[in-house]
Length: 512
Image 1 (cartoon, helix red, strand yellow):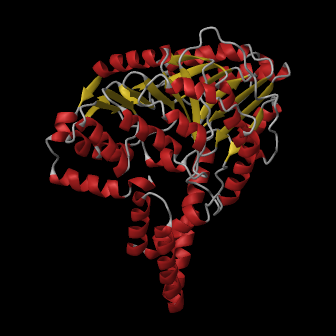
Image 2 (cartoon, one colour):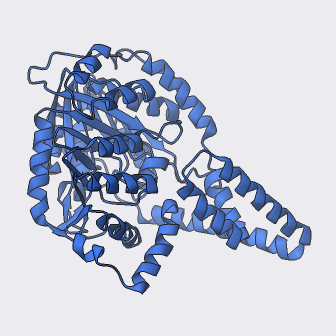
Image 3 (cartoon, one colour):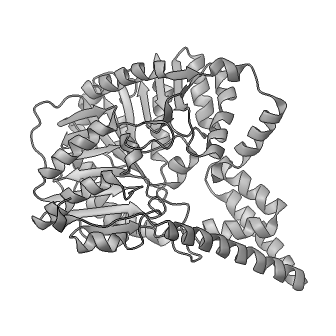
């Protein structure tokens, strides 16, 4: 950075420790208080037990996945004080009901400005792709239109995506929107920040939103320093040492939008390891896409919905939407879609299941975490039994050892049904991709785990045909030789001790 644009955004280990210890202290105090009351006043114990029964009945009546209910029910029955305290802290007091109402109202005001593109949808249906009907589901139930006038560039190396993104940011004239789960105070963001500050000084509307838990390592004055430099900044769901934490709901989205004409999204955050500049878990594998054209409108709408919800503002300004221009190299069909825990639809899970069910020849998947429901397990197994070549790539080096153990606990059941499992031996594979028959693909931020599919705010892009899908297929073919296939190893069985450990981990997998 030049001298007048330098911004100190150093990491804050004290903040991370403070927030973590505060949350642990709060939980401990809650458990201790209830325990002491139970021991001192017999009627309190009776109230606790009655409340536990009410909570379990209420939980069981919810139209949610049974895998979520069972761990909570067992925990509350086995350890009423601990289980009830955790449930009160993370679920009851962490409910985002009012936020959901506000977001739905804002969403309605923005989505009415989006094109319905029914003619594009009908044109796609004529392509006779088995997965083509999926676009109708996304358009009608998720309010995510499909587009034709959009050029897509696939990046199997995110360092290339980062370089391209900086070039496009330099060309920004009207606005820049960024929304990320992790922003880390390292060289990557410093380079980006230099451009953002300079653009803000030129009058460009620059906005950054980041998740507080995901970016817990940055300095607690980070947002203010960015604001002082001309960057409008919002923190999603600040992690504060108070009871009402909403801890389970995080903004896991990753997108950059430039003038409503160019958009970037994928698996990568704004931190050095995502661009292979730092190697905490070996070589980092990730992916992303660049969109140019009308489909960027959907990314802009998703950003504005979250921004206005968190800022408690009403700004469905048409100057940010309905921006389109002819793209000469547009091909295929593009359908950005978002998922959030406050709506009735489990959009990302539905898209993944549709792709699995519609696969006829090949189904290739990369995911850093494989913690899936029985429904998705059965869908993958059925696809393999139909003769589909189903392959799943997971990391060879874990970032979270416990979650990695849970991921591996799913291998045996899938392998015995014919699903092929690969581990990326050079390091950590963070890409979130599904490629169906080499013709339809999903790429974005949704992992194949409970948190992404049920608790987090996510965004993805569905691609029907085009060069980008071909490039993703080529990337998969280059990726398999770098992996170790462990299918046979897990198909042949595990030791009794390992099976027992996996059973226990699987039981509490939805809570991880």
